[in-house]
Image 1: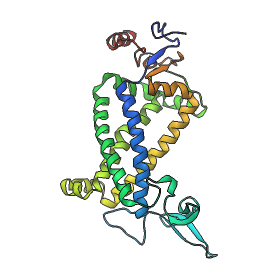
Image 2 (image 1 turned 180 degrees about the vertical axis):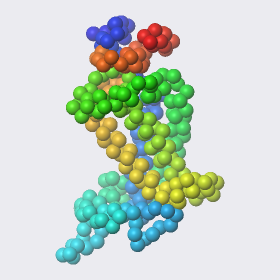
Image 3 (image 1 turned 90 degrees about the vertical axis):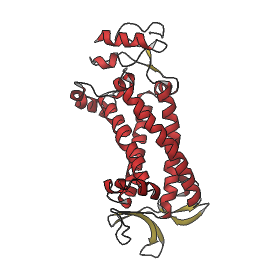
Image 4 (image 1 turned 30 degrees about the vertical axis):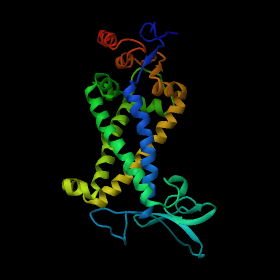
Length: 302
């Protein structure tokens, strides 16, 4: 097996440096921020658990709402209503236990920050984390655009889209190779999250702010009104939750120790399986190797 000092010939196993310190720090700080934003956001949502489209709140016909009512037997039940279709969710959403007592609240106490109904503190946590998250996101997006190494790692290069179907089959059959670069599915997913979902979270959040609405009224027009922005903010949040769950599952399946090491120390053990794809061989410099030499090797392999 190759070591840091001796990466070995192309196609052999090697410990490479996949993620820079900047990427690793951004990843973990952002993960904490998103957890705080999600749980405090659910606390804020509980204050008015309904979503609408447009500029105004149409209380009689919300797009989505979570609440509690009495069923045909007179017993309280929780529900989620989507475009008028009610789905019973007693015990989880709408009607759940707090300190052993059932009460009406959209999201349960274990999912909100803080646990008790406390709108002002929830808003404090949410806005504090939002500023940290937003500033770091702007810098990281700029870094991802400027850095040649980041562009090579997550950018879609010529010919890669032709491998999309092949990668779908590999994912469906849970066959994962430890290659130097991301595959096309990973790249498209990360690009969508980084340059679409996360910026949408920030922009729709700003649209809901009265101060920003006064300073940048065009934001409200872009998203079709403050209520539409709030709905999109909520939907983007749960799209990120879905991404996180799939991301976590794939990390566990494809090698949790190797993936965690890559995001903690930067080191990632490859298995030499390139599938004949040049970018898999030359995406990142071997750990402990000077960046300039890595760039020379990369171009030499082309």
